[in-house]
Length: 255
Image (tube, rainbow, N blue to C red; front, side, top):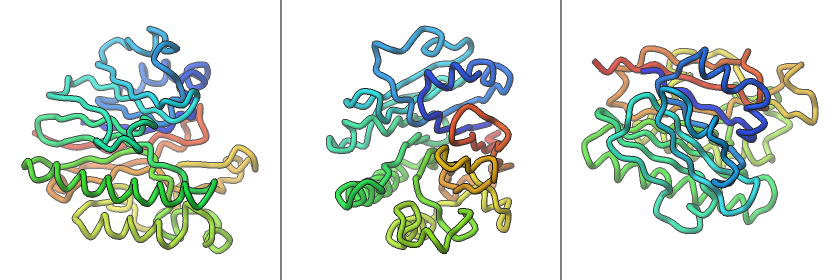
């Protein structure tokens, strides 16, 4: 099973830049999108009904903001929206799906750069997510958490760590949460295969950073450790355009 994740920075913009051709060619088994930035009534059939896929969407209350989508060839046992906490769920940041062997959470984690209030919101969201994942694990299934985490974990995960030590997205308090995630038995799938490779998943439009490959790795698949033996690959598709992020993918052999 190939599970992809991509912050598309607006699903309509991505569609204009070839998203539908890309999904037809790439044929992911499961694809989680973040930051779709659309409302239900604005979603055209060409994006709602892609041939061969079941599709699900969570919309933020604020127009043109946040939102996530899930496309899957395999019909889930169940699909639901949010963490069950209104202050988080109103922003449309989570779609969760139950499959035979695992739960999948497709998440657009908050950005904490705009204010201390939003940083606190982000940190609270992090804690609520881990607690929610641990509750799901008690049901006896493994966990896949894919999405835009909005934090680079280690200095290797961003182009200029020294000048970003006081920038949200690389603050010690944010990075400690990713440490905590690993301490609870979740694996950073890309680092599992590529422990020393400098690879980025997001580049600022404002500084033409992609041309210089001056980016950040903030998009991840974390999996619970019970899926380790099933994990066959993890890649970052840096050549795929259409957003300020690129897709990330893992392959699980669940036979």
